[in-house]
Length: 224
Ligand code: MN
Image (cartoon, rainbow, N blue to C red; front, side, top):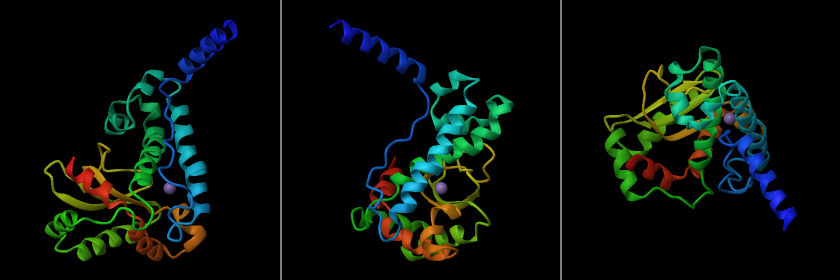
């Protein structure tokens, strides 16, 4: 009994020390789940090395201002200009990387498990002319992003759907974003996202992505 009590106190003390720090949510599927479109080695390294580093570096940047651990990552990014000046760049880059990857994982699903519903087909056709036209515009945004960055389908405050791309780890949540909105689909076009399998063929990676989009999640995000 005594030992259990002591363990409990130690557990609570340790929990208090790390309380509120940002943590990666586990992937909602296995590393191999998106094969052959996205290979398991890339998924493993992407999650455990790249995404994990953004998380660690975000937590490090906030060490001087532990009260900021209590905010959500969305609040930190949207309120970037109000943060202490000495951590704004770190939150933009590492906080951005932490957030972008967190949502990117949930916007993918094993091939065939989250197909596009007729309702979503209609929504995309109304916004872009056709599903095919939507895909072409998204592919263009992803392919033409120079260097590293992300392609996005966003829902603007007006409700309008819009395709954009951002550099580095920027997102449409940033106060300085040219077009602001809520992300409903995103694609990582940093080389680390595709180089092992596709080498320099970014266009092939973008085409393959359509097989593993979680359209159920996209529809849910558009509706919310
Ligand atoms: Mn990445």
